[in-house]
Length: 269
Image 1 (tube, one colour):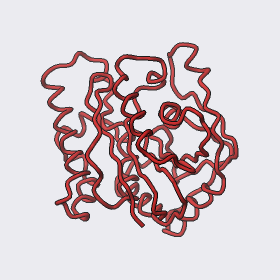
Image 2: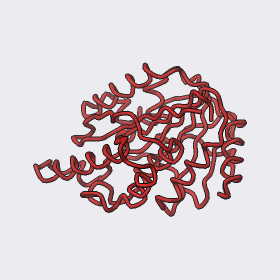
Image 3: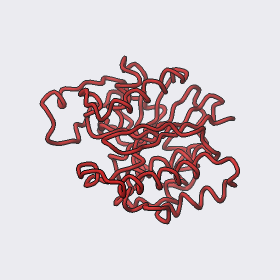
Image 4: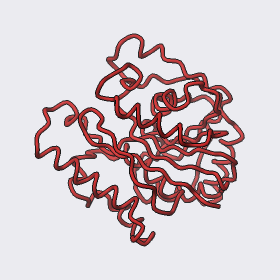
């Protein structure tokens, strides 16, 4: 690993709403802007998005990927958003090689564009769109141990000033987002967030225990209420697999009326 690799799990909000001035995303916009201001500007960004699943880990390898507007029912301007960042085929090949060398079959895709799990948060964080980006898919089994292993394989990357982003959401129950809030739902949300923060940040937890907690994340308090389907949590598993250490204290925002966490790791050589 480079000595300057930052690993960041973010909660990326609902579709394009963070870019449309939605008040329920104000805190998220503020947090991402603050985070970007604290980080050294990366030379390249690798994004693991909750919105791309394949049978094998798949990596965008095109030089100039387009955008995929993978959301529905939003205003016309949502489908005119631009984020013309370049791809980075050399980084894509390195990611592919790292996975294959770890015994994880993977493939390159030089035709796929970037989905909103990449372009929405990056338009907030790096609006100039001048940093080369590569996107890595989830595996459609959504197996937690598999995604930890993918992250561990990425430790073999040797790229100066690389930023790795797991773009998901620490709370992702669509029905709950649009139902009236209550003390009971707020307590469930908070209990899972507390568990996740302790799991990711507590320096007293041995790494083998931390990994086991994340593998069995569905045993956490109200885990399946917060994640009826776990695709928005799996980018965090890739991030932790890569970092292999406790994160810095969580960064919390209220998004769509729910508490959501973000986590940052500085990965030493």
